Length: 339
Image (cartoon, rainbow, N blue to C red; front, side):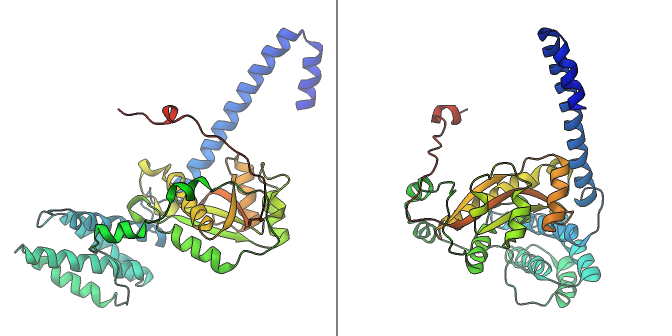
């Protein structure tokens, strides 16, 4: 089709050919945009918790969202005794459903722990929660575990400030996109540590959608890089290629239809900084693609259908001396706006 159009345009007056080319490109791009939106919508409808899904990941996300409402209430300076009864009911109902259908896990234990703190808070303020105690005890019997997380913890400002006693300005300003790597392999432990730190990234109601798929073999890396437009001349020198994804089953509403990109982006930046803190270089590889490429990467890397691919990341150890792009940033006044 392109060859036919090119030949046709060659026989037309330049002004007419230019106008027809513009109309053709606009029509083509509108079609491709509509196709891409339909592709995204189909995935969100199929794999999120939007339409009453009762899949394991969706129910777990509902539990986390509900018990985090209680955590936030307990973390206020002066919580109102008896607050959040609807959230408590939802935690009880969803946790019971999860245990009955999938068995207990750390999430159900954390839900129980949060409800226990809720009970203790209300009893300390002479608020009657007898309606909850017996139901919670029955549920707790099915959720016995060693995990103690959930609810709140007390910290001091000194603890926080001591932990941030680094030159963060220098840390950030010395992180570059690295396009030259040594042959030294990046250890699995270094990657695992970075992912562990990245899990601390903010996410909507702490639902932690971020995941990482690690490609190590030459064949795997080559197949992934062939699908990404922007790694020529350096991608093949990276020790590993990471595929960063966001689980769609952690999102539950129409309003969260784009949340995978937000949470996935936060997770990715934390991962990059966590690698940087260990002296591991990285280069972000954009994954703003059309449906055909997105379908292909799922087949190549075995990415589950209920994950949205956020980006790729080339990683490796940094040479002792190298060139990096200066990449000057916009003036502050273009970015910072006080309202």
